[in-house]
Every structure is written in C-alpha cells, then in structure tokens.
Length: 99
Image (cartoon, rainbow, N blue to C red; front, side):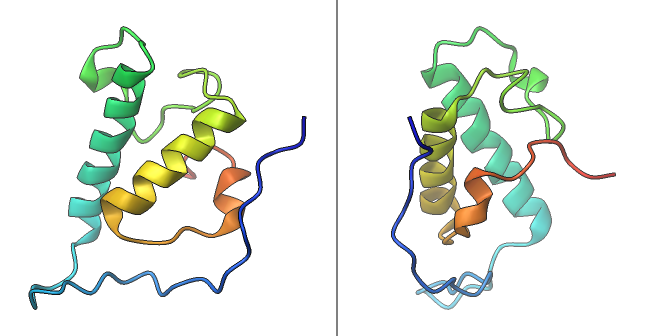
C-alpha cells in the first residue's frame, strides 16, 4: 500500500501568530509541547511506557512501533497542537534527532 499523501499546499511560515496578541511560543515551549503530544499518542496507542521513556531521541518506528498511519496521526496532532502546518516531507523524514 502506498504511503498516505496529503494535498499539496503552500507551506506556512514556521511562526505562530497568536490571535490574542501574545508572542509565539519559544523553541523550549514547543519542545515540551511536542513531547507531550508524542507521549499522549504513545498512551493512546496502548504502549505501556513511562512518560520519561519518550524523549527527543525516541525513534518513532523502532521504539514506538509507529507505521505510516501512526506517523500521519502524529503529524496531524503536532499540526493541531503547535498551530503549524508541517511540510509533506515530515512524513518521510528520519526519526532520529541530529546531534
């Protein structure tokens, strides 16, 4: 089965404009929010992992067992949670953080 595709749209700027005039989140705040989203997805998927076992170095496929559908769900949750549109390449990107 081919990987899921999404309609091609122009990528949005990586900044988040808050409607109430507050400044966009800092990278540290985004990192914490991203980890919260990933940990919630792991819980919702029935993985019995302690929260601190999911880090920025967690491999989506090898450690969490995410397949292409799981990646699609994660991308959708990240986009909703961070208020940003991720590029289509995010579905295919390596899952390990670069040093």
